[in-house]
Image (tube, rainbow, N blue to C red; front, side, top):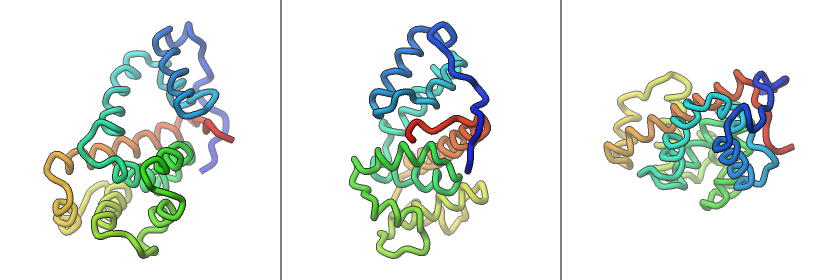
Length: 180
């Protein structure tokens, strides 16, 4: 998906506030980028940014789903939504959780790629159904529930929804990628 002409222009410290500006700089440094355009853009709406940060942080690293599965889910959502911004960030992050380029290719090529575990296939099938049809079939839900407890199932639905919403926000606001 091509994104041209970011719709929310870059803002300075006065526009986003000192604390938000510092958070944006720390986030950029953490990912090795000059700017983290998603944060810089969302920080324009100060209250919304402060509400989104803990929610997003909980789903990304503070949840009950193992982090390797979380990254696999995010990569699949990003791939299905054709969100280059999310793919750039999460291909890097996923490597830290033992999802190398070969695994990432399997995730993006699902269901045409063999070598995934039943658990991974269940997670990816559920992601595909949620993103493509906005729900999960009873059969897929039953398979998902074999691997995730009730709290994890709720978290799964929120994780997929969060990253699909981010992909939509990124595309709508035409947020530029952070890496060339």
